[in-house]
Length: 292
Image (cartoon, rainbow, N blue to C red; front, side, top):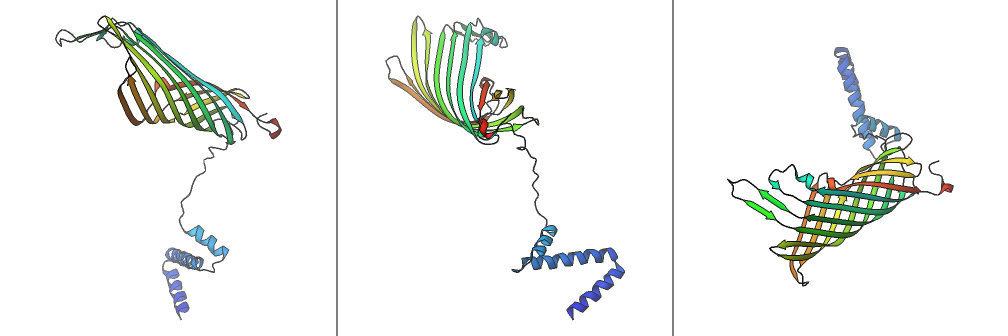
């Protein structure tokens, strides 16, 4: 009885509103399919109908990892170096500074090795050494006669040495079909320790202080890579920040601790002092294939 009534109503709606009747019929069939698919004994065809009808979230595969920049099984050995200088000319933009005699330099060397556990992805370890030195012979601050402030610093000297060890994960993306140009993203967990030596002139006397420091960092280092030869790659990376924890202890000339400091911070910004130029050599087992 219900089936006959359903067909009569469907026929009347088809005569009065052809388009609406077709939509209602499709909706009714889809609803019946969904109900059948939800039943325990739903067939494969009913499941396919249900999947076509129900809205589903679609994920677009952009095939970012389709291009191979580095192959699985390769071993990477490399070196990154950064060097920067600071001189009196860098302070010309500050007119309140006068009689500046300043010179300094920062050098960082980081050898590393990594293994590619799959295409374009590797784990590795990195060792590091950095040296900072700077000397300020004279330094005057003049804010004008109206402010009645004049500061004279006769002599300052600072030197620092740090050693570090870290582990990193690096992922590459090829920018061309032949895999010669690429980008990479690197996450690094590192531990560093070292000491700073600071000396200054007070009146006619020279005073010295020494400090020991320890730093733990989780850092993000993206960069670009270009193959100059089939197994030699040049890289340029940028330190964009992350999480940092540091601890410092200060000692006087007799070696007694006079102060300490601990701090942590998280920031993401381009650090111009953390731009690294590097060179990597990729080794692979030719019996297993690789780049020809």
